[in-house]
Amino acid sequence: MLSFKAMQGGESRRHQPLDDAGRPLYCNAADHTAGISNKKTTGQAMSNVHIQLKLFAGLAAFTPENSDRVPIAAGVSVKSVLQELDIPSIKAHLIFINGIKGSLESRLKGGERVGIFPPVAGG
Image 1 (cartoon, rainbow, N blue to C red):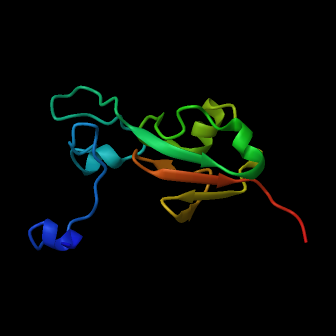
Image 2 (image 1 turned 90 degrees about the vertical axis):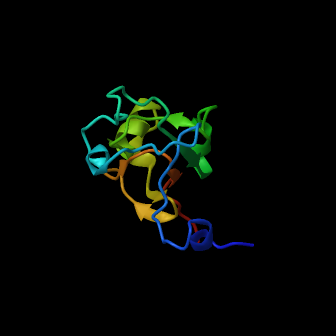
């Protein structure tokens, strides 16, 4: 079995999310900036920007049918995604983005796995 480094011709490359056709979702560093729409080199807006959304415990009832491919605008905050899906952001206590702790203000580029947990109490 080849390692990721070996499959890439020996060069270490940072993972970049791909669209359904296998093309990079972002063309240059400027596309990653919040507030700038994601563009192809042709200048057309890209429409294949999605996240995978997992809602746990009491938030599971808010899970959309398309939770594996929730369409977003590149650069949008987690809070904006929750508002768009009518999920009360006050109930989002613990947020993970690709397994790393995030916040309501975290910006999404597309291709991320977002997990959200409500406040939990007990003993």
